[in-house]
Amino acid sequence: MNAKRTQLIAGNWKMNNNMKETAAFIESLEEWFAEDATGGKVSQAVSQGKIEIVIAPTYTSIYSAVSSRRSDKIEIAAQNAYYEAAGAFTGEISLDMLEETGCKYVILGHSERRHIFNETNELLEKKLSAALKSRVLPIFCIGELLEERESGNMKQILGEQLKSAWKNLNANMVIAYEPVWAIGTGKTASNQDAEEACGFIRTEMENRFGAAATESLRILYGGSVKADNSADLLKQKNIDGLLIGGASLKADSFQMILKSAI
Ligand code: PGA
Image (cartoon, rainbow, N blue to C red):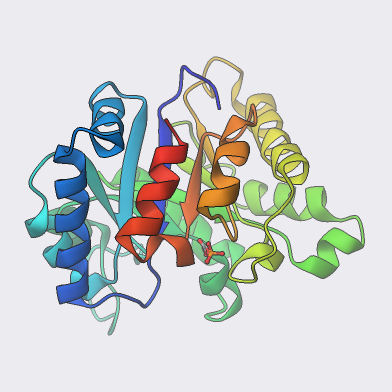
């Protein structure tokens, strides 16, 4: 973490939490913010620009999340978007539609989109380009498979995933390093491995765009983050926040992670 950058703590709910559960989660987070104990401190840290809190519900729960907010302390993200603005694309959602529902961010290139739904670097390049022209900011995910890490190809794979989007990348976006072997497996990357990969991403971005232009770029770590490893991950120099799956689904475990960030 670098004090100049606002830490971003994001919950990626994947295909979990229906409308009712979403409303209950947001309401309990808002109540917690209003409390004097640690909830109040987190809320203060958000007001001071030290932390930004983002929740990415399913498309069908976005409106429920947006309309359950009582403060301006929780930002909403979508988990995916299509690059065209409108037309015959059954099942897809445009960036303008996401903006209209109140999304500030959109997650693009999550490993489940890449590996279960076969999203390619070419498709993601188009999605990133569209997102950066829209008013919804991308959280662009990259990460290597276990066999790629074990064969010593981690940097090459991360470099390729970054370079496939090279002409679109810029410092307004957020990059999330999520090693595929750490997602939903309980096997968090060690602080050192996570820092090494995030440091590599920062250096690649600096080499491409210059240190000044990338000073505000935030790089997140994601993959089996929990309350008992979040504080140490956030201490790493090149980790500016966390993208959390399983441990973000319940308000109490998400709150514990938020507490660890202040
Ligand atoms: P996990 O998921 O925290 O459940 O490993 C992270 C993610 O997929 O973004």
